Length: 108
Length: 115
Picture 1 (cartoon, rainbow over the protein chains, first blue to last red):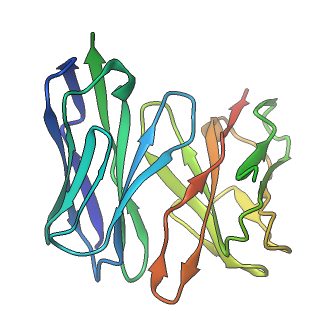
Picture 2 (tube, rainbow over the protein chains, first blue to last red):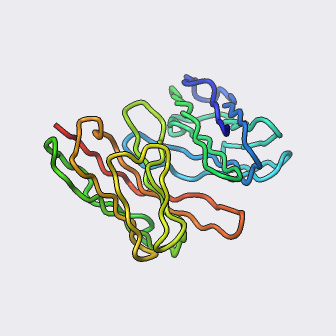
């Protein structure tokens, strides 16, 4: 069965303290691995799509990477405005699978 | 482009009432989705549609109905509202071509309380 597991559930960082979020996936025929950001009370906002192992994408302080079993979202020198819940979603042959998210809090 | 719009933003229903949550997109996306998100929890797929006239059940379809008569609109109907349907509802859309499904765009959500 397709499954996505994100860790940790919550992450508290000091401003400037780099860290990584993990997304482990088990998917029948990966068609795409998506990262979204969700702010409280709002809908998720698209960040990245990764399609194959070895692929990397960057946007400002965020960098997403993909292996055959995991994806990582690296946050470099985070700022308070990077505080949000980050969602990992896989698209397999048959369905979309959502992770529960990692809530990141960045203190000034 | 307005993207994905949802109405209403907030609604309080009494147990047993019915209502329709509206969703529209102006990006000509063929796929549309309805999710619910309970407090502190992840998104759960209720129904989805791969094109006008085609809908299918997601993970938690009981108590809901959908229709898709046009590419742009995908309303979600709640019949006989129950307290367990208290949640935030998100509509989303995406483009798909063959086996490739591209990123989803989400609406701002409808916060529903059933008392």
